Length: 501
Image (cartoon, rainbow, N blue to C red):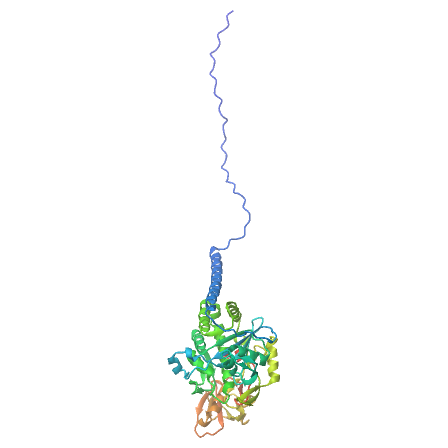
């Protein structure tokens, strides 16, 4: 039987891909970061980098400048063939010698500042400058040029002639044997080992003061010396090089002669240190260069005083203040000590001088027993207060004020009447009435009464009258230094600079 016919075959479908169900969009996954400290602002990094560069550059400039100047320093072998020297102590000792050298000054300046005559090539000033081992203190000891001294045996550097030990004035050692004999003589007298020798002349001194912009000095009395050409009124003055030289050279102002001059030199050196440390000179490489160039342009130094020593000294003095320095003069036992073949000299007090130089060797401060910030120092006056008679009157409505002023003036030395009175009228200002013949006494009294008005009254006589006014504040202590008596007191720099006066 025939099979039924088949249905036509259906075409096969191509398999379809599975239908995808759309998913919601996913958030991108961020990589996990490690925790970092907050970043510094870029400006801070730049500032630190710039500061580092400036500091390094400044140090480099300073050393480069010092190295170039070092080559120009005039050298002297101040320690040649020296034997049997004192033992080395602590700290550094510099023998600072001031010489004439007026041949290096222009003819115009020689006339202006009374520097006429031929140069003597002699020592005008001599000091031992002791820098403490930790560089926080400077002690300056003045050695009077007329000191009685004995030079050791030596050979004349020019003629070659042999000389045995013999007495001289101290400043004559330089004329006989130059720096070497000067160092040997000072070491024999003090038993202090000198580490460095520095010789400064007039020209170097003037240039140094000028490059610092002048140095301030103050005086309660007029200073006049026709020999040196100095003429300063009482008060405060800024001295430039030439006038400063007149100030430190003047020795005909009073009966103190060379001893009085050394006190003014110490005061000037304290002011010089104050100016150098407070004006930023030591922190500014370029200004430090200018000052150093002025100083080193006309000095002589020993072979060991070079770049490293200069930079070390400059760094040490950056932290200096006037109270960091102390000044004294070697103790004098006898004025006008007669020496055969020499004449009048100054004889040292051997016991007290030995104590002083022992302190230098042991690096001990001379003012250790005094507080650094004590009461204000007494103001020096030109007349002994015990010779100044004073009557005090009350020109205010404050009961008992005249009595308190009378007692305060008596406590500082004035010869008050101890019988204060009332003024006939109210006085807005404190007034000192005086006879012009007693003007020096009046100035001495005015030093104890700051701001008081001086009013001359002819024929008033020796009794000075003080009317205490409404502007009265206090009585300042004064002191009188007898110019005929040697003074060996030790002072700090802050006690003699104008800001501390």
